[in-house]
Image (cartoon, rainbow over the protein chains, first blue to last red):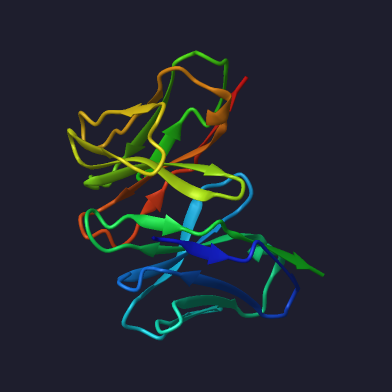
Length: 112
Length: 112
Protein backbone atom coordinates (compact mmCIF):
# COMPACT_ATOMS: atom_id res chain seq x y z
CA UNK A 1 0.00 0.00 0.00
CA UNK A 2 0.91 3.64 -0.05
CA UNK A 3 2.57 5.00 3.05
CA UNK A 4 4.87 7.84 3.99
CA UNK A 5 6.71 7.75 7.30
CA UNK A 6 8.57 10.43 9.20
CA UNK A 7 9.98 10.82 12.67
CA UNK A 8 7.67 12.98 14.76
CA UNK A 9 10.06 15.36 16.44
CA UNK A 10 13.45 16.99 15.94
CA UNK A 11 15.20 19.50 18.16
CA UNK A 12 18.20 21.52 16.97
CA UNK A 13 20.25 24.44 18.14
CA UNK A 14 20.01 27.72 16.29
CA UNK A 15 22.73 27.92 13.64
CA UNK A 16 23.11 24.15 13.30
CA UNK A 17 21.87 22.13 10.34
CA UNK A 18 18.59 20.22 10.56
CA UNK A 19 17.96 17.01 8.69
CA UNK A 20 14.43 15.69 8.44
CA UNK A 21 14.01 12.21 7.04
CA UNK A 22 11.16 10.47 5.27
CA UNK A 23 10.55 7.07 3.73
CA UNK A 24 7.89 6.29 1.15
CA UNK A 25 6.58 3.15 -0.45
CA UNK A 26 5.41 3.96 -3.97
CA UNK A 27 8.43 3.39 -6.19
CA UNK A 28 6.58 4.91 -9.14
CA UNK A 29 6.12 8.29 -7.47
CA UNK A 30 6.92 11.03 -9.94
CA UNK A 31 7.35 13.90 -7.49
CA UNK A 32 8.18 14.13 -3.81
CA UNK A 33 7.46 17.17 -1.72
CA UNK A 34 8.29 19.02 1.44
CA UNK A 35 5.62 21.25 2.93
CA UNK A 36 6.01 23.53 5.95
CA UNK A 37 3.22 24.34 8.39
CA UNK A 38 3.68 27.12 10.90
CA UNK A 39 1.45 27.24 14.00
CA UNK A 40 -2.14 28.04 13.11
CA UNK A 41 -1.41 28.29 9.41
CA UNK A 42 -1.94 26.27 6.26
CA UNK A 43 0.62 24.22 4.40
CA UNK A 44 3.25 26.07 2.41
CA UNK A 45 5.09 24.23 -0.35
CA UNK A 46 8.81 24.48 0.44
CA UNK A 47 10.30 22.48 -2.37
CA UNK A 48 9.79 19.40 -4.47
CA UNK A 49 11.99 17.03 -6.40
CA UNK A 50 11.34 15.05 -9.54
CA UNK A 51 11.94 11.37 -9.14
CA UNK A 52 14.78 11.25 -11.69
CA UNK A 53 16.85 13.66 -9.60
CA UNK A 54 19.15 12.79 -6.71
CA UNK A 55 19.50 16.22 -5.21
CA UNK A 56 17.97 19.64 -5.35
CA UNK A 57 19.31 22.74 -3.64
CA UNK A 58 17.41 25.94 -3.01
CA UNK A 59 19.21 28.48 -0.83
CA UNK A 60 19.38 26.96 2.67
CA UNK A 61 17.37 23.90 1.66
CA UNK A 62 18.86 20.70 0.24
CA UNK A 63 16.70 17.76 -0.74
CA UNK A 64 18.29 14.36 -1.19
CA UNK A 65 16.47 11.47 -2.85
CA UNK A 66 17.58 7.85 -2.65
CA UNK A 67 15.20 5.98 -4.93
CA UNK A 68 16.72 2.60 -4.19
CA UNK A 69 15.95 2.94 -0.48
CA UNK A 70 12.83 5.10 -1.07
CA UNK A 71 14.31 7.69 1.26
CA UNK A 72 13.89 11.44 1.08
CA UNK A 73 15.58 14.00 3.30
CA UNK A 74 15.39 17.74 3.81
CA UNK A 75 18.44 19.54 5.13
CA UNK A 76 18.06 23.08 6.43
CA UNK A 77 21.39 24.85 6.77
CA UNK A 78 21.94 27.48 9.48
CA UNK A 79 18.60 26.72 11.13
CA UNK A 80 16.83 29.76 12.55
CA UNK A 81 14.03 30.13 15.08
CA UNK A 82 11.74 31.04 12.18
CA UNK A 83 12.25 27.53 10.85
CA UNK A 84 10.37 26.10 13.84
CA UNK A 85 7.34 24.41 12.29
CA UNK A 86 5.93 21.06 11.23
CA UNK A 87 7.43 19.66 8.06
CA UNK A 88 5.44 17.26 5.95
CA UNK A 89 6.88 14.89 3.43
CA UNK A 90 4.52 13.85 0.62
CA UNK A 91 4.61 11.71 -2.48
CA UNK A 92 2.37 11.84 -5.49
CA UNK A 93 1.19 8.42 -6.52
CA UNK A 94 0.86 7.16 -10.04
CA UNK A 95 -2.42 6.28 -11.67
CA UNK A 96 -5.85 7.80 -11.45
CA UNK A 97 -5.72 11.44 -10.49
CA UNK A 98 -2.27 11.13 -8.89
CA UNK A 99 -3.18 11.66 -5.27
CA UNK A 100 -0.88 13.22 -2.74
CA UNK A 101 0.03 11.03 0.24
CA UNK A 102 1.33 12.82 3.33
CA UNK A 103 3.46 11.69 6.21
CA UNK A 104 2.33 12.52 9.75
CA UNK A 105 4.75 15.47 9.91
CA UNK A 106 7.96 16.19 11.80
CA UNK A 107 7.85 18.95 14.38
CA UNK A 108 11.10 20.93 14.27
CA UNK A 109 11.98 22.87 17.41
CA UNK A 110 14.85 25.34 17.19
CA UNK A 111 16.37 26.46 20.47
CA UNK A 112 19.01 29.10 21.25
CA UNK B 1 -7.10 38.75 -3.63
CA UNK B 2 -5.66 35.98 -5.74
CA UNK B 3 -5.21 32.59 -4.19
CA UNK B 4 -7.25 30.12 -2.25
CA UNK B 5 -9.49 31.18 0.62
CA UNK B 6 -11.55 29.27 3.14
CA UNK B 7 -14.46 30.38 5.30
CA UNK B 8 -15.17 30.39 8.09
CA UNK B 9 -11.71 30.17 9.63
CA UNK B 10 -13.16 28.97 12.94
CA UNK B 11 -16.44 27.24 13.65
CA UNK B 12 -18.05 25.76 16.72
CA UNK B 13 -21.15 23.65 16.24
CA UNK B 14 -23.16 21.00 17.99
CA UNK B 15 -23.59 17.33 17.28
CA UNK B 16 -26.27 16.70 14.67
CA UNK B 17 -26.12 20.12 13.03
CA UNK B 18 -25.34 20.66 9.38
CA UNK B 19 -22.20 22.65 8.65
CA UNK B 20 -20.83 23.89 5.34
CA UNK B 21 -17.21 24.88 4.87
CA UNK B 22 -16.45 27.07 1.89
CA UNK B 23 -13.45 27.06 -0.40
CA UNK B 24 -12.75 29.49 -3.22
CA UNK B 25 -9.79 29.71 -5.61
CA UNK B 26 -8.98 32.36 -8.17
CA UNK B 27 -6.49 30.46 -10.33
CA UNK B 28 -9.08 28.51 -12.36
CA UNK B 29 -7.36 25.32 -11.25
CA UNK B 30 -9.20 22.26 -12.47
CA UNK B 31 -8.52 20.13 -9.39
CA UNK B 32 -9.73 20.89 -5.88
CA UNK B 33 -9.36 18.87 -2.70
CA UNK B 34 -10.57 18.67 0.87
CA UNK B 35 -8.31 17.27 3.58
CA UNK B 36 -8.66 16.92 7.29
CA UNK B 37 -5.71 17.17 9.64
CA UNK B 38 -5.66 15.28 12.90
CA UNK B 39 -2.80 14.68 15.33
CA UNK B 40 -0.79 11.64 14.36
CA UNK B 41 -2.49 11.26 10.98
CA UNK B 42 -1.01 13.99 8.87
CA UNK B 43 -3.48 15.04 6.17
CA UNK B 44 -6.13 12.68 4.93
CA UNK B 45 -8.09 13.25 1.75
CA UNK B 46 -11.85 13.51 2.16
CA UNK B 47 -13.03 14.31 -1.37
CA UNK B 48 -11.58 15.71 -4.55
CA UNK B 49 -12.85 17.17 -7.78
CA UNK B 50 -11.17 17.00 -11.17
CA UNK B 51 -13.43 19.63 -12.75
CA UNK B 52 -16.80 21.27 -12.32
CA UNK B 53 -19.51 18.67 -11.70
CA UNK B 54 -16.91 15.88 -11.26
CA UNK B 55 -16.23 14.74 -7.70
CA UNK B 56 -14.91 11.57 -6.14
CA UNK B 57 -14.24 10.08 -2.74
CA UNK B 58 -10.92 10.16 -1.01
CA UNK B 59 -9.65 8.20 1.95
CA UNK B 60 -12.20 9.33 4.59
CA UNK B 61 -15.45 10.45 2.86
CA UNK B 62 -18.05 9.13 5.30
CA UNK B 63 -20.24 11.85 6.80
CA UNK B 64 -19.26 14.47 4.21
CA UNK B 65 -20.85 15.74 1.01
CA UNK B 66 -19.29 17.95 -1.67
CA UNK B 67 -20.45 19.73 -4.78
CA UNK B 68 -18.73 21.68 -7.52
CA UNK B 69 -21.13 23.64 -9.67
CA UNK B 70 -18.47 26.26 -10.47
CA UNK B 71 -14.77 25.73 -11.08
CA UNK B 72 -13.75 28.22 -8.41
CA UNK B 73 -15.84 26.90 -5.52
CA UNK B 74 -15.76 23.58 -3.70
CA UNK B 75 -17.94 23.55 -0.57
CA UNK B 76 -17.75 20.72 1.95
CA UNK B 77 -20.87 19.87 3.95
CA UNK B 78 -21.10 17.87 7.14
CA UNK B 79 -24.72 16.76 6.97
CA UNK B 80 -25.00 15.79 10.65
CA UNK B 81 -21.85 16.74 12.53
CA UNK B 82 -20.28 14.30 14.97
CA UNK B 83 -17.58 14.87 17.59
CA UNK B 84 -15.18 12.75 15.55
CA UNK B 85 -15.37 15.41 12.84
CA UNK B 86 -13.65 17.93 15.11
CA UNK B 87 -10.56 18.69 13.07
CA UNK B 88 -8.74 21.22 10.95
CA UNK B 89 -9.98 21.19 7.37
CA UNK B 90 -7.81 22.26 4.47
CA UNK B 91 -8.87 22.97 0.95
CA UNK B 92 -6.30 22.72 -1.85
CA UNK B 93 -6.21 23.20 -5.59
CA UNK B 94 -4.01 22.08 -8.43
CA UNK B 95 -3.78 22.69 -12.14
CA UNK B 96 -4.17 19.88 -14.65
CA UNK B 97 -0.46 18.97 -14.55
CA UNK B 98 -0.87 17.92 -10.88
CA UNK B 99 2.72 18.97 -10.20
CA UNK B 100 1.90 20.83 -7.00
CA UNK B 101 -1.05 21.52 -4.72
CA UNK B 102 -1.71 24.92 -3.19
CA UNK B 103 -3.37 24.99 0.20
CA UNK B 104 -5.81 27.34 1.84
CA UNK B 105 -5.33 28.63 5.41
CA UNK B 106 -7.63 26.02 6.97
CA UNK B 107 -10.88 25.95 8.93
CA UNK B 108 -10.76 24.87 12.55
CA UNK B 109 -13.99 23.05 13.39
CA UNK B 110 -15.06 22.05 16.88
CA UNK B 111 -18.11 19.82 17.27
CA UNK B 112 -19.52 19.81 20.80
